[in-house]
Picture 1 (cartoon, rainbow, N blue to C red):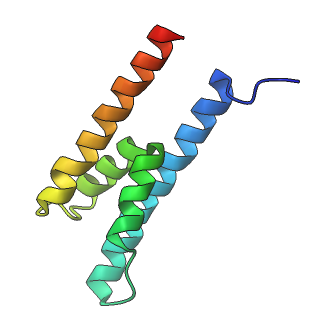
Picture 2: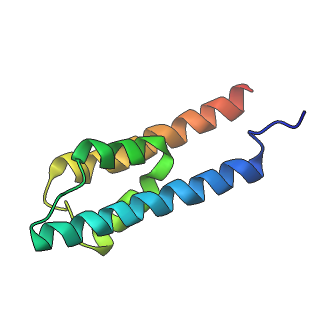
Length: 94
């Protein structure tokens, strides 16, 4: 049986989760402008926590959304950095 955690599958997953995070920031910004239902902040953080840090940060600055909230400006990059460190440690040990 093939290992599902091969490089190709991981890269596909990261591409998809980052696109979703980027689009979530776009959708939330548009809904904020129109005064409609919003995406929960916890959902945005979960997308970043699940590997969508680059997409979340790119969306935040592309759409100028949540850029005045330190929780996002510091939190998104902090999660991304911690995840990168964990991956480096994982591959260094394994």
